[in-house]
Amino acid sequence: MHTLNILIMGFISIVIVNNLVFTKFLGICPYLGVSGRIDMAFGMGMAVTFVVTLSGTLTWLIDHLILMPYGLEVTRYVCFILVIAGAVQLVEMYIRRFFPSLYDSFGIFLPLITTNCAILGLCLFINLYGIDNLVEAVVLSFGAGIGFTMAICIMAGIRETLDMADVPACLKGAPITLITAGLLALAFMGFAGMIRIG
Amino acid sequence: MILSSILQLWNSAWPAGVTMLGLGSGFALVLLIASIKLKVVVDPKIEQIHEALPNLDCGACGFAGCGQYAKAILANPELLGKCAPGGPDTAAAIANILNLQVSDSGPQQRPIVHCRAHTADKTFLAKYQGISSCTAANALANAQACKFGCVGLSDCTRACRFDALHIVDGLATVDYAKCTGCTACSKACPRNLIEMVPFSHENMMTVACNSKETGKSTRSMCKVGCIGCGICAKQTDTFAVEDNIARMDYTRYQESEQTQTAMDKCPTGVILYRGPTAPPPREPGKKPAPAKKAD
Image (cartoon, rainbow over all chains, first blue to last red; front, side, top):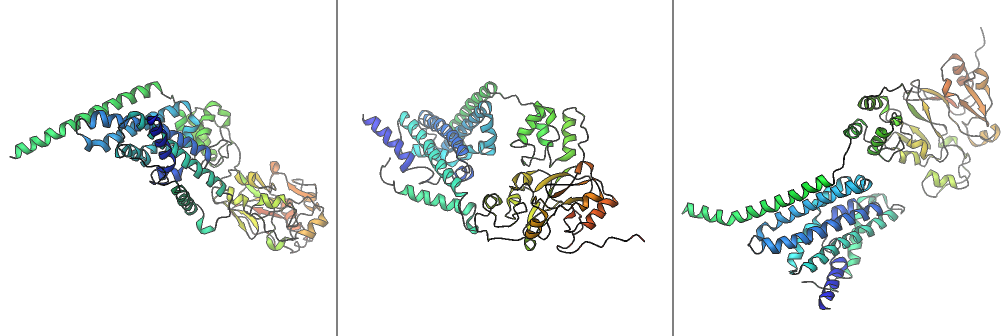
């Protein structure tokens, strides 16, 4: 019961309270770049969720089975980047094979998941939070992906409506998007301190 | 001393190297297997056709983008020649890739705006203050008296990907030097004012009005509208009057003395040239040149 409680709390915490996009401002480039339409934003969110779950799990395993026992923590960044790049390649091949239209609409943004700082950030945070349990690591990485999907979908929904709005000429385009992002982050600050991890 | 420090460095560095090498080869193996299992066979011709296309993704061909059009051409070569911005050169290049002969598709299509009324020539019944869009303005009861002419709220300008259409003093004006004939503007215009015309000559003569009102009411609303008098149709049969509006028959387009006379005699000056080097039309309200007496 205690374990389950920790898992649920960890999940809610990473999705809402410690959302990587809203509180850590990680993964901003796809968050602003692919949030024009809600269906594409959802696709992007799903791809990131898959990659982050896979790489979060793998990096935890590598960290705990190889790097820590042999005192090789210095190579953590390089190893993690390697894992993420490999996972992204795998996802790219998979999407190209089974969802060609999604592949076309992603274009350059799919390989760019490799450099999505939210993913590397999460892999490092798992270590920083001192997670020493594989299941917790999996739940946290999956939650981070869900949190990112939620953030990017909210943003896409707002931006779709924003297209109809009468925005002052000097704020059209990027400025109003950044203001929206800031306001959203502020709104999610309301959850801060509800749950603490680590 | 130096040797021992080098040895120490080596001793602490090699496990990291071995780990990286091991991890790297492990991932390489996984990716290798995946690339074999998830292989997507792409016909190299699709890539070649895509490169031959202008890559503007303008949608003139009816597909979402150049990539989709390239795939469609390969599946069905009859779709060749639908790329308006590329024109005959692109069609020939693609035909070359597919080992096909391309037939001459005739002159390129360019848009002609069937209205010549600037703000000063129009009559307004009210001031439109709604959403700044032709489609929205067109859906309301007309603030502008003429319900056929150019609204001038830039739907076509926004549709144009090539900066080739501008609203000049209340009238959509095509910049033929920049136009690629992609048909986006003619689809965007809610009043169907913009017609795609095969430009067989550099400048094309046209009737720049779309008003199907009777001559009298057209005159009451617009200084430069076509009143359907039929003087042009009497001069030459390339003009025909139907629904109170004269139209040029572009399938039989030619410039002759008769068409020139028709243009000169037009009482409202609505017959004019459109094109990259078109001469300016007659001033609105100016009477036609007096008919030349036979000497």
